[in-house]
Length: 198
Image (tube, rainbow, N blue to C red; front, side, top):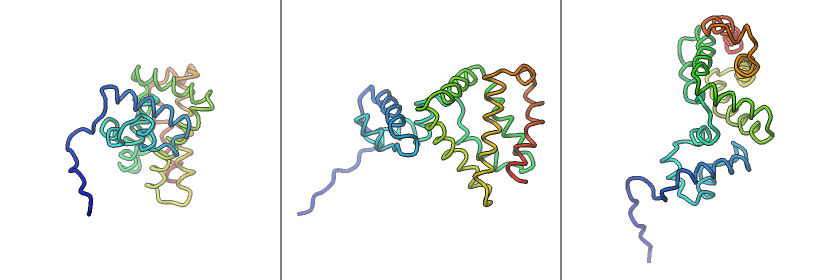
């Protein structure tokens, strides 16, 4: 005799009133224990004692949950593919402007600087951030380029922008910290452009 499954309920998956907080706490532990690549939505849900559908309900993708759990202030994995898909001769400058415009917002700058400082000084956070950027940003850029050395090109872009953020917002090198965004984007953009397409 075959067993009949109960019909699937519509609406929000069930979970307690503290489910969202439990998911975030579980994500922090899971990402810390297993790293970004090895942690899965299913393993995070199991650790939180909820259904994986509830994780998706609250947070969407693993990248969204990671961003929430560690406080990523901007979402290059979401925004950069659109920039790359735009007018090709403007991509380098638009990428630099996108990051700098975001970091000019006080809350983004505060969280971003904290994340950079933590990532540079923590054996736990460094591989997490590297995994996130490698999979969600560098990998996405590389796939759009479609050339043999695409991953190296995308990594050079990431290194250029990371160095710029450290110099301007963490070290606060005086001339760079005082320069207008337009000036920096105009000067650094062509280098990023060359990494991507030349």
